[in-house]
Image (tube, rainbow, N blue to C red; front, top):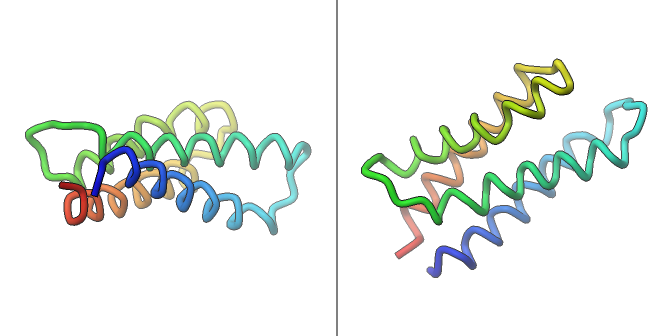
Length: 102
């Protein structure tokens, strides 16, 4: 599959899933938080299949997930859930990218 198409699809899916996880949360500005989370997760899913490095794809995914999630975690002071979901989603997208991106 084309890396751009895969990344766009993976980013949309990861972004939507993360927003769905946020629905039960009580936040002062929930709309803004959900938009920010969607954009961050979309970036993770989009970037992973576009990166070429001499590493396993799942590791590239985990690193991208960590790096993109760090700024959100620092700003919100909510480290474990944001970084954890970012790394887990990145690893999953990286694994899938290694399997289906040609």
